[in-house]
Figure 1 (cartoon, rainbow, N blue to C red):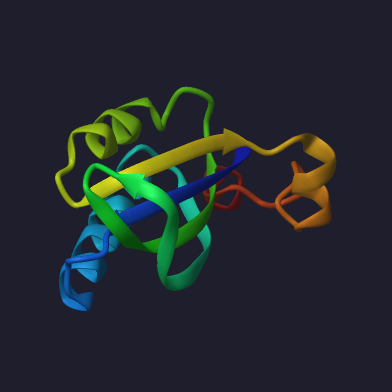
Figure 2: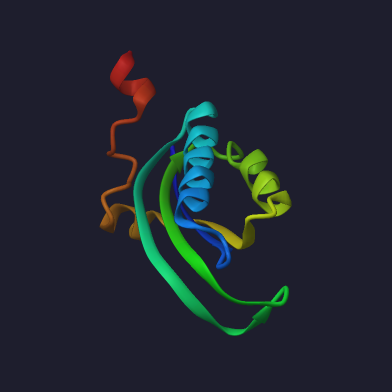
Length: 115
C-alpha cells in the first residue's frame, strides 16, 4: 500500500453536518477500494487568499490515506464533480515522508493482517 495525503476544501457556506456527511462518504469510498484513512485533520473554516468560484472561505480537511496504486482514481473523479467541494488535491507521499509519519511499508496492511 502507498501513502497519500488528500486535502479537501469544502464550500464555506455549508453547515458542519453537511461537511461531516461528505467526509463520511470519502471514508466509505476509500474503504470500498481496500484503502484506509489513517488520520483526519480538520483545519476548520479559513479565508481564501483570493476568491475561488465566487467564494471567500472554506472548510479545510486533510486526510492521510493508505491505498493501492490507482485505487483512488474514482474518488478523485467524485471530488471533482461534488458541488460541496471547492478544491481538492491528492498527492502520493514520498517514501521517506511516509516513513517519518509512520505510514511506510512496514505498516501492516489489512490484507496482511488477515492472511
